[in-house]
Each structure stands twice: as structure tokens, then as C-alpha cells.
Length: 119
Image (cartoon, rainbow, N blue to C red; front, side, top):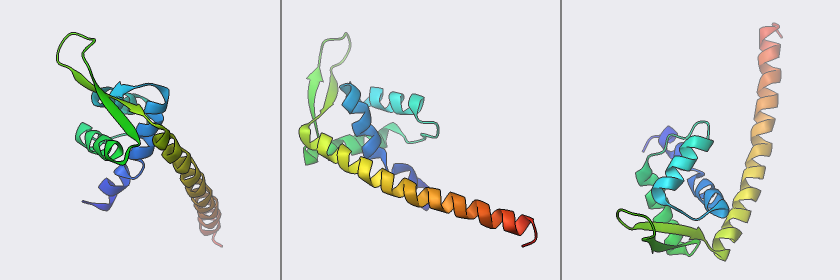
């Protein structure tokens, strides 16, 4: 897997948990929601379902078959208390990363300006 491809999956778990924190959904709806709400989301549905399987195996989400709508039954996922704990940890991790990324952007801007000004 390429470095760019790995990066696109880095926070998928966090975003799936965030979606499920708002509303129980089936995998396809989760993928659609991520495509509609994240500006640069390019992950395929297979990755979403693999991540959901890992989350279910770890106890962060649970699923049940939904037969309330016409058509085939769909596996609907909901976040558990363990999932909420994991979401809390993701928030801490993302804040930490944002601090480092903001430092990078500020420092890069200063260096680029110095370079542009001949310094």
C-alpha cells in the first residue's frame, strides 16, 4: 500500500465513530455521509466495511440486521460505550496532531517568506 493510500485510511476509524455518534447507520450510508461531509474523502466502501468489522470485533460498535425497509436486510451499526471511549481518545490524538501540524504550517510560511525575500 502506498504512503498516500495509508494516509487516507489513518483516521477512518475516528470519522466512522463520529458519524455513528450522531446516528445509527448501515455501512453504505456511513460511506455516503463521509463522502458528503469530508472535503477530501476518497476512501472506498470496502475500507469502510473493513473498519466497521474491526470496530465490531473490538466492541466499539455493535450491529443488528434492519428489516424495517423494503429490499434486503441491512446491517445497521451503533456506537457502544467502548466506542465513545475510543472517540474520546481520537479527539485527544487529533488535537495533538493539529498542534504539530499548525507548528509546521507557521514555520513553513516563515521559511518560505524568508526564501522569497532573499533571506
